[in-house]
Amino acid sequence: MNSWTYSLISVFLVSLLSFVGVLFLAIKEEKLKKLLLFLVSFAAGGLLGGAFLHLLPEAVEETGFSLEVSLAILAGLLVFFVLEKFISWRHCHIPTSKEHPHPLAFMNLVGDGLHNLTDGVVIAASFLTNPTLGIATTLAVIFHEIPQEIGDFGVLIHGGFTRKKALLFNFISALMAIGGAILTLFLGTKFTGFIQLLIPFTAGGFIYIAGSDLIPELHKETNLAKSLVQMLGLILGIGIMLILLLFE
Image (cartoon, rainbow, N blue to C red):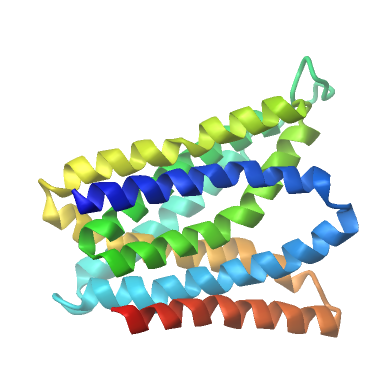
């Protein structure tokens, strides 16, 4: 029952992050860009730290770096690649309005819902393995979700949604994480091999998000001082994951 309690509390807290999008409206654009600059680098560090310091060592602890582990990591990379291709697949030429939100907003909700479902799966799988791994995975997801939810809220506003409607739909999308967690908790108690493969799969997903989504965003900034802030964020994110190892 501890795995159920920890998992459901964690995914609910992650779901509440959907409301962080109000920062998009509460903070001036220039200050928001500076904040996001640090948050994105911090998230990249957290994801890489979670993958290389927690998930991969756990995945290879019993069986070693086997072919199954390698394929599960590659599957994580490929699945997130496919999700991103799906999200940006269609375009619409009808002008954006409140009566006709741009399909980018709807596609963003669908893609974000699938991504949140995956978050719930990996958090629950981590808690089924051990509590420390669950905490590390939850923190890595939270680090990534904060800048992502701010961006998602901005997409919905740009797509013609009102503020209240954007917050509501973003929260509904975020609740998919709870469904993913419940599904995993049911399956995990019956299929232990399922959980063993989900851990390296999660590592592959984290590496893809950090390497394909977050770090390329950081490369767009060439100012030396701001680049040093990015480096600090990366190191801090990895450092928090390193500190968690002390509690194992």
